[in-house]
Amino acid sequence: MRRTKSSIEEHLLIIRKVAWEMHQRTGHDIEDLFSEGCLAYLSRTKQFYKYRRKGKFTSFLWIITWTAMLSYVKEQNKIPFAELTDEIISNLSKAPIRPEITMFPQKEVFKCGEFQAF
Image (cartoon, rainbow, N blue to C red; front, top):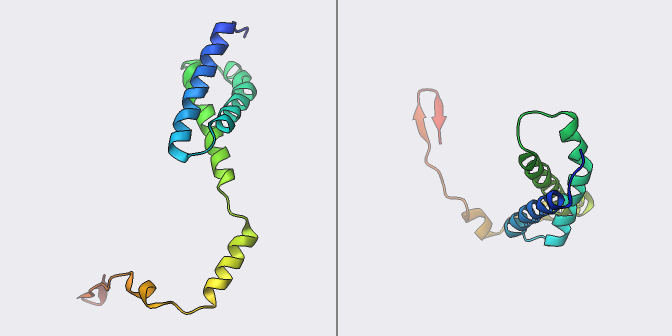
């Protein structure tokens, strides 16, 4: 399991590429994404060698870094439950305004026997 300096540098380039792609899709800070990918790389490398299956290490690396970065993005985008609850309660207490009602087009109802289709 001994890796050379050049192989580690190659792996870091792959992690940076994955971080750049995630940054382009989500707009999150590339350095934060890169650090999440590096943590996944350090923590999961032994897993690849322990359960060695068919496939390249670079494919494994791509999957674990993408998954780690995606988990980070999802965690950052969460809305705290208290804020969400307050917003829902404040919206429930008001009546809908006219533009909200007309946003949804009226659907025609077709009768087919006993069933109605929209």
